[in-house]
Length: 186
Image (cartoon, rainbow, N blue to C red; front, side, top):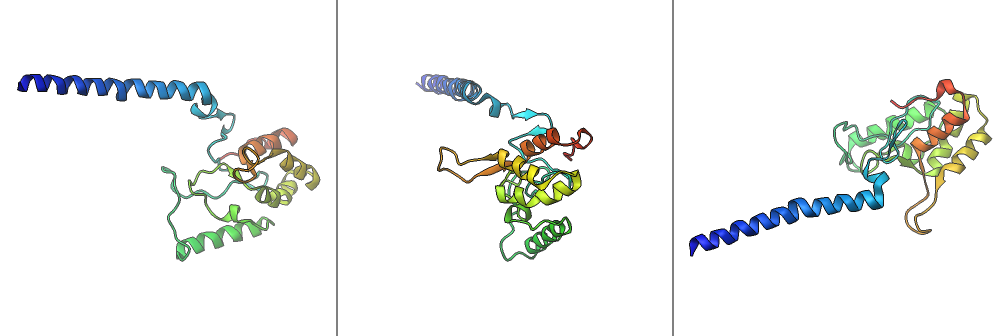
């Protein structure tokens, strides 16, 4: 009797191992590859992934939100609104942007929830136009048109907010301006 129950337990454990540990993950992977292959494979291209925020340096490039200063992990900093460290970080970011001649938006001085957000609001992109125009010797109007061409609307017309993917914007900027300034991802 004990041997029969033990055999049932082993057979059931092996069955669940095959179903949950092999069949389900393989089906999930096939479904992801079939329906969302680009995203499932990381959307890696020239200069990085459009799904992960890239760090651009210098006034000749559009910048993403500041990262969470956690190079080995994603996630917010968990600093609350009364945190002295958060206030100091935001003040530092504001001072940086003012030194670049930019009136920063919230996107440019605060981290995202993940710390690796690749997108900024259109207002944050437009705020950086004078800085990039001056550094690249381009007209403000041409860069405003470039930003406008890179604005993604709401999903399904009502979900989320309009956004600009910074990597895509900087790729378009590289095509627009001098080839010598084309690589600025840090």
